[in-house]
Image (cartoon, rainbow, N blue to C red; front, side, top):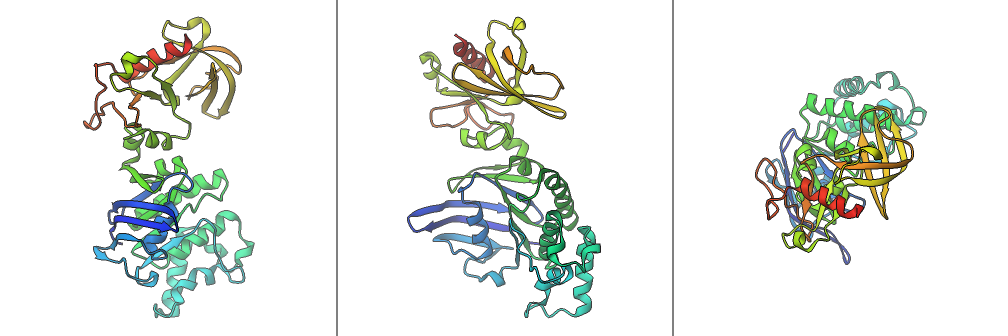
Length: 369
């Protein structure tokens, strides 16, 4: 496996700038996830690393060597696409063996069979080797697609949302298998997705890409809890961030423009238990997801989201009280930069000494009034 490094990559498609000054590195044996919305430049980044796109500026380094001018065949990377891209007229064995029979490989039949059978066993498709690709389920087809990359034993794997076309249960199972395989093989993986759950569960480190700009890189838990800015905060987490606007001039003068509160940091109480700083909200809908519940709430013309792990925590309808009861709220300045300070000392404390949680409670009182 090999280290991957991008240095100041810029890529244009006509008048559209897909990537601008993109720089990050992936350690040898690291699972790096690039997270971002549709159109952020994720697939363009993968194609640039693979050599399928040539950057207008910047360098791609593989294993410490400048690979910017190398052809795709010289880069020793394996690309796993969102769609399976299997040869329907070939068996599973022949699909897996296909990349090993390329002219430059010069592998014997015995070595090809050994690699194919070894990978098929790891992916639990050894009983399907004689089946045609068209006779497989979606999950099996994606396993074959992954296997075709694994048999090559490349320096780096590039994965373009390979699980997005599968149903939720299959995605969950293949996430576990993929992470297990990566650890077992010590594989270097660059994986792109718009799915925050995939980013949180798979990544050793995650990079948040928005509009061709890399916003933040770090361990997924750190990026979730201590986002550098509002765009990162809104990308991390599968529920929207609750935002409280700051309208008081005295608070705005101290640099705080908006307060963000995660859904799991809002507590929903019966209205009769409301305190002086609590919001009064209307329950619009409750989604019960097994051990988890999500409440969709309305305060005036504003929508809020609350999440809890206790079954039956939220009433199905009616008026409730909503309380901000955490010190993990996030304060943002007018540009969207986060102001609150994390345990590592990054960021800036809001002027005036007021914690984001206190500010959020006061914003909630302002919304109620």
